[in-house]
Amino acid sequence: MSRIIRIFDTTLRDGEQSPGCSMNIEEKLMVARQLARMKVDIIEAGFPIASIGDFEAVKRIAEEIKGPVIAGLCRALDKDIDRAAEAIAPAERKRIHTFLATSDIHLQYKLKKSREEVLEQAVAAVKHARKYTDDVEFSAEDATRSDMDFLCRVVEAVINAGATTVNIPDTVGYAIPQEYGERIRGLVERVPNIDKAVISVHCHNDLGLAVSNSLAAILNGAGQVECTINGIGERAGNAAMEELVMALRTRQAFFEATTNIVTEEIMAASRLVKSVTGMTVQANKAIVGANAFAHESGIHQDGFLKEKSTYEIMTPESVGLTRSTLVLGKHSGRHAFRERLKEMGYVLGEDELNKAFERFKWLADQKKDIFDEDLEAIVAEEVFRMTETYELKSLLVSSGTGRTPEAEVVLIVEGKPATMKANGDGPVDAALHTIGEIAGTKSTMLAYEVKAITGGTDAQGEVTVKLSEDGRVVMGQGSDPDIIIASAKAYINALNKLAFLKDKGGKAAEPMCE
Image (cartoon, rainbow, N blue to C red; front, side, top):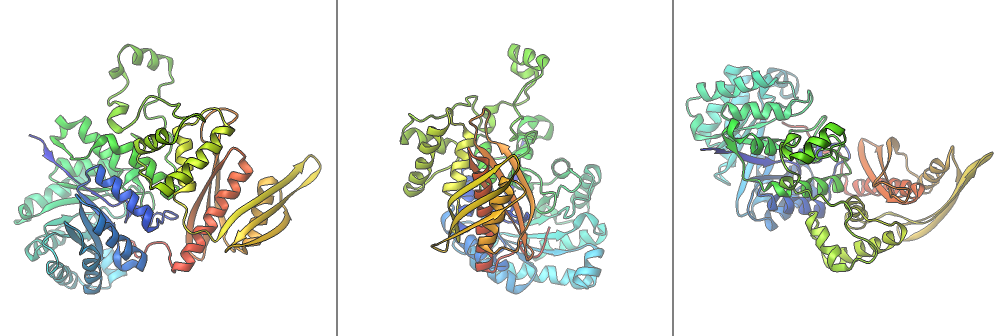
């Protein structure tokens, strides 16, 4: 009989630590609701002591989300543990997740502690956490570069202290599947009380092996996997939940393991996370990429038409895809619009629906066909916008052969109009330069990406920009049939995120862990 592998989703914590991926409270709640619909076992809602915003988000999720265990991350410090306990207190099922590094390199350069001091601190942290809940997870940060004898001592000690889950993270993505599996197997064989806790794994993707390492760990005794939607996370990201879950579903007989995940909700989750973070999904990404179920080769097409299983090892329907691409048009009504958004994973309030529907009707008049990707762009722009410091009122750009491009922009800045003209190297540069002058920004543009959301000459253009200022990195998105306007929207969206972070005193998430 297959084991059930627990899925511990850390999209809202480790995933949000990706540069530019910060989410506001309402966005986090939308993602948490979708994770609950997927029947994720544990949601790591955030790092409560990192900021007031993180604390409030964890608390709101603990109050509103039913079903999954709600976890809060904390360092192995009493003040961190107390703060996490306060944040998760309203949850019907709650977990405190505390961590401390165990590798000699972290002990020497980061913690400046001896092994015995770390062992003592880990035990004390677990005991303190147990005062608040019976569900305590301990993570041995940088476990894959830790001395195996010492790691075994720590794991045994924290289980004796009350840890019910022990996490063996590959914090820097250093492990190779064979050796990682052997490390998990070694813990199973050498730690005498290991049967009293679930072994968890949390793998980073620096060498592109996060999913492979996680699967190797499952084969060797791990009972929980920590992962994120679309594999987002620090540096090269985390193990992608959709890949892990579908690998276990597709090869259940091999792994003799499966999960509780409702896989038909995977695409809705992927699209939602893409929308709220601005992190695009590459076309050839496994499971959720645009090409994951596309067949272009003539040989592939011929075989597929005769028998789908010749070139598909899973069905699009199993991850929540449909075969239709034309979804809505200008004659569609509000009810059809609402239902299609619901199918895509967006459950909107009445005011949010009205704003999105108004934008949809406008777009339907501009282009013949409306696709799912158009709807994603509409929701991203009209629903997920935070309070705006800057709003585009009007934009006029002139350019041509033998003429210097010039833009005239009217921005609403904190409720008041501001007008300026400026030149640029091209029409887009002129527009963004003018907007930047009005905003007085000191930010640096790290990236500018343009793509057509759908096919055809009437397709919407989607622009993504990445800005950096004072250590803060944000991504902005904008879409419009006019690529210059789309660029302006994306730039303004990013400027508004910078303004929001400045106002809240926010920054990239505090200390890197696991």
